[in-house]
Image 1: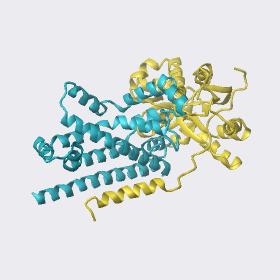
Image 2: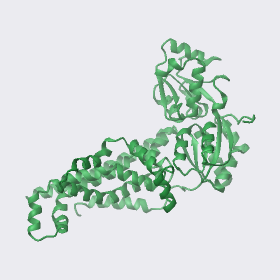
Image 3: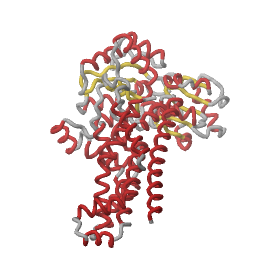
Length: 265
Length: 225
């Protein structure tokens, strides 16, 4: 064999892999969705496949990141934001098609390591005690600049007068999913994360999970809207309509999201 | 295991290698053999991607090639092609990011070919092309092989610029490194671990084969002298 024999074999093997058929079908509408909707949307996509035989391609990132990508020409066909403002921004700039729809309502949850504080009706007051006692070294939120759950978390902390105290202790996730991932892996003391992802990651098994009481943060911050984009086609429209069906709505509720508010915008 | 992501990674590395290696050889040889005043600056420009974070390259590509840019808009209008969030866009980004890996080892190798050999070949009546093909290139071959291995291996692992310019589109721009990141964010460390191990193995094999070929050549060379 020549001196390049093994190298040639490797190249042939690579070429063989490349020209072989296979891999999953990469068809179906391309959906950009907020990272916080991952568990719910993967379930809904699975149900959609069973019901219609059609598949969709899901891409998750923070809502703000997806808006940037769309404005730079990313070929998405449907956008599910974790808020309304980003959808409005895209609509005003002419990237959308049709009317935005409120598909769900986000829920913020407070995660804390076991024993950090007692469960109570006012978790943020308990957090305040823990902060004052120096028991909190690291607190996680999603990035408030481009993740709606991050800005809701910031609003809640400001409302409770904790933002200034907690800012030096913050560990910021690039999106809601990364915030939850940090909560699992990074030895954090507490975090404000989407309930949907906290449930998906079973955070309640490694610490305490509590809901924040109403009016801790403006509800509207997590009124989640979706809209079709300029590229969209009939297949996208079918999925868009399915997301509004009772079946999909039940899935959203199963995954820690509330039904869309019935009050008009 | 995301086989389409593996395929995309290999395709990206393959295309980058095939398109960039001839460029690396030509530019590397030219820089080795040609004296001119702006040479240090040009060499610095070629080496720039080594020190710039990939996100900077990604940022400039988005700015100049994205839908909002004049260039991006024109290319879309003429060719129906988008150079962002598409595989061709990834290839373009990868070509830019890998320039130093393709040029520098080749340039060093051609610099090591002594001027006397070059002159002797010319005196024997060989045309410049034959001098290049029959004398210089075989002597510079280890540099070319290093450039090939580095370019291929580096592209396999590329993450920052792929994420910025390509997004994370399944079947189009979700390479293996992006898929690993995606699985971690989906709380699926097992899948991430499997793909990471595979990427590690492929990279190791690539580089080992390259060094193996270099070793064999060095032994042959030593045996002959």
